[in-house]
Image (cartoon, rainbow, N blue to C red; front, side, top):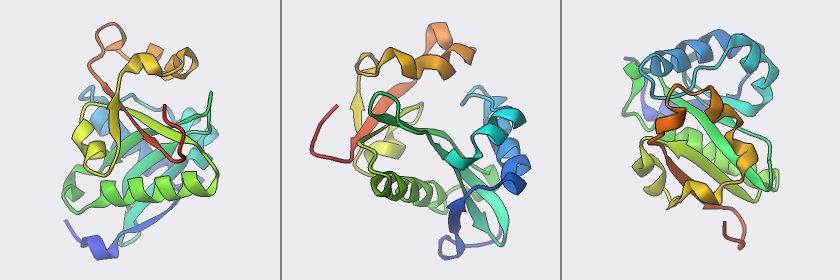
Length: 162
């Protein structure tokens, strides 16, 4: 592993990042820790993704969906296993939160197996039932759909609470 937390660069993803994003996501998807994303899906939604770079290598990614029913999802949070523990995930999350505020998004949510990743930086745990039905499209593709153990978390970016 090379690099340190001070050399992490976060920026919007571009088409030339897709192979690296796919590689990182696939690593966790094979362990059923997140949903797989196809190259076609990544190409179609590349404007929703951000990457973390160290020495010009993609070492992490995160998606920020466009709002549905006032909610924007943080999705596909993945850090290259060789670069864990450098604060990359927190930097990506802070960047996505700043982008959401700049875009006037109202509430962010995520479905996660690691709620402490979010709660330690000001997110709160909510019941999945608070999320509108239309956000569940991705869930229907998940092999754990009928036995989901993910935890819903959210962060309100305005005074209004979910």
